[in-house]
Length: 491
Image (tube, rainbow, N blue to C red):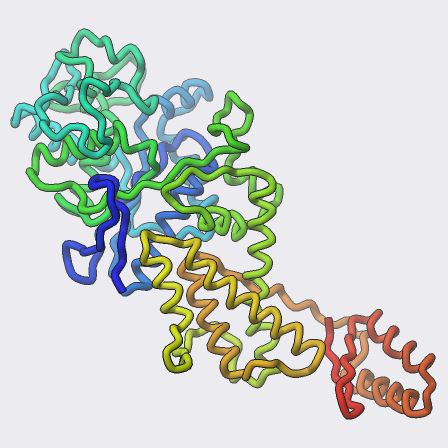
């Protein structure tokens, strides 16, 4: 089976072939650290965390890098409002990012470069662009000359005459008429220092980098001139990723990335999420309602990653119900493994042995997800397994045995746990509560069951029912089976 990915650059699905056999260099544009992460960040981080997990499960050695933008006008504006520093603001929200992502079970990247740690690489790249004639200095500012790069617009598919400087809200509106620019489409690589703003020395005087140049420099410094996969939200296609390509490829003459992957945006009740509409929801606000973090992951993964997704109360309720189904399946081994005679109940994978001509659960899962990271299709496979295990658990409780052989159930459960972990979906058994000292011992329960059996023989059903009800009230469920045998378990 071959993995196929939809490449934004070519606008079609392509078979995935990494630059180096067995290895993947992957970069994800991270957050600008000026506020708590919202649902849009949650979707981006969950989708690309899961893509990385899947690539690793497929056998690739993935070097996954995600940056932090810690130099930005939004960070500076917040620092002014709060009477603090840019460093203090960015540090606080980077810490908050890690807290939120840990709750969503997003694995940490291999590296998290920051703009402030990448200034040497940024200045070096700007110097090279200037020497090659792609950049020009104007009173301490340095701009990229967009018309010098013939392929500008190839990622977004926009023609130069249709482009607007400052798209995505990253450049002030005033910049489009900045008299220092030779062309209104040009964008800043380096900004001269303004009074009372943090700045760094450079060949063009004191200043700070523009937003787009940061990622070009960090990709180059951390992963090389050409990488396998570059990801981010679809709002970054233009101008951010378009500008990254122009900056990087003008210097190297090589493709910046083989595959460009973009996730769709999150809407709230059909509308774009924004603070002005009052529908802006942070990750921590959502999880503190509380909503189970695994239900949030499931909500994200049930949608096609490239399409917009609508966050509604009904949608999160549906995801919560879906998670309960998966959770029951994931905990099947913990709840019933001992009773079924399994040697251990730890979820270590075991090879499955399907019937002749049948596909294993893992093969069905891979076949689905290989089609452009179709996580929803992979989940459909896992839901079928989880529902089957839940059904077998109910049969075991009420009839004392399962319809499917215990060894086969064990293989299904271990496959379910392994593949759910690929999607970052993990269930932990609830901590067992200690039985109080005044509770019934096993011997006392067996004695009462024997007393009930004698009562039933003499047709004293009133006593028989009272014993059963008293045990039920103390958390003991009796299961009457054929041949006069009664089994029991603690609820």
